[in-house]
Image 1 (tube, one colour):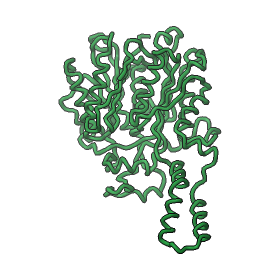
Image 2 (tube, one colour; image 1 turned 30 degrees about the vertical axis):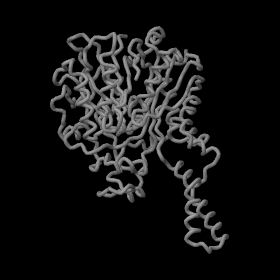
Image 3 (cartoon, rainbow, N blue to C red; image 1 turned 180 degrees about the horizontal axis):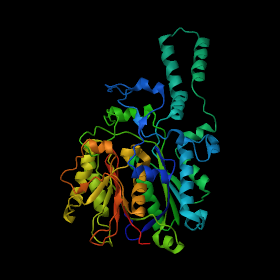
Length: 461
C-alpha cells in the first residue's frame, strides 16, 4: 500500500474512447448529457446464448453492454491487423499517442524518449484467438483420443482424415497472428506508437488494473525513473463468452439495465474501450507551462483479504490517503464511485466510505455521487481510467456532472443516511465556504476485495 501525497503529480494530457465516444471531447459531452451508450450485441448468432432462466454456464440473461461498434476502427486504419495485433493493442497504441498529442509540444515532445514510461492496465480475457490456441493445442488431441477409445478397431487412415478435417475447421494461427496471444504485446504496441524507449509493461489487477497503472506511473515519476508517464487501461470486445462467468456468478443485470445505487439495481453490464493519461511531476509541469487538467494528490490500493471483505479492502485504501498529508482536512466535493450496479457491492462501497470519514463529520447532501459505468458499462481493466478521466475533466471545467442517467434516477436512488446526493444535471462547481480546493475521489473495486482510491484536486494554475 503506497501513496504519493508529499510530492504531487500533474495530469497534462488525456485520451478516451468508450461506447458512444470516439475521443475525449465526445466522452465529456456524453457525460454532461448523462447519455447512456449501452445496447445489445449486433450479432444474431449470439442470441443462442440468451435465456431468461440463465443458470447454466453458457446461458446469459442479457447481451447488453457498452460496445464500441464502429469505433473499434482505429484512428490509424492501416494499423488494424498489423503484425497480428489484437484490437486492444491497436486501441492502446492509438490512445497513448492521442494522450501524448493532447499533452502538447512542451508537455511531451520536450521529454527524452528514454525518460518516458508506459503502464497499461490490461486483464486478458478469453477471445477467438485464445479459443483457436486451445483448440489446436488441446481440444483436437483430446477429441481424437475419445474417438479412438470409442472405436478401438477403427482404421488409422480414417482417424487421420478426421483429424485433418478438425484441424481445417479451426482458424489457423500464423506467425504474426501468434503475437495477439501475448498480453504484453499491448505495452509493446504503446511503445512503438509513441516511439518511447523507457519502461513499458502491462499490469493486471482485474477490475482495478487501470487504477494500478495510474499508481505505477505516479510511483515511477516520484522515484525519478521517468519524466513523463503514460498510464492507461484497455478492455477488448465484450463477447458472449466473456459474459459467461459473470452471469454464472449472478452479476449480470437480468433486466439489461445498469442502475447503480438505486432500488431496482440488479447487476452490472460490461463495456469496451480505453483511456490514457499523460502525467508529469507537478513542479516540472509548472516549469514547462503545461496545461494541467488536475493534480493527483494521493493514490492507494489495499485488499480486504478475500471476496467477503470487499468493504474492508476499500476502507483500508481510503484510510491510506485520507486526508492527504500536507492538506486541509476538507472532504471531497465529488465521488466518482465504483458503482457497478451490483447491490451488495454498491452498499459496501458507501458503507465503507462513511465509516472511513465518520470522524470528519461530512454534512448531509455535501458530496456529489456518480459513476460513469451507468453510461458506458463496467469496462473492467479500463474502468479506473474511465472514472479518473471523468473526474479530471470535471475539475478542469469546474463542473459537477450528472451522477446517473434519468432512467436510473427514475428507479429510485437508495443512498439514505449518507452524505451523498446524486446531481440530476450539470451545475457549476462552486468553491466551498472553507476555501478548500475543489477535490474529487475516484473509487475502483475488484470482485476479489482489492480496492483503489485516488484523490484528484484542482490545479491552482
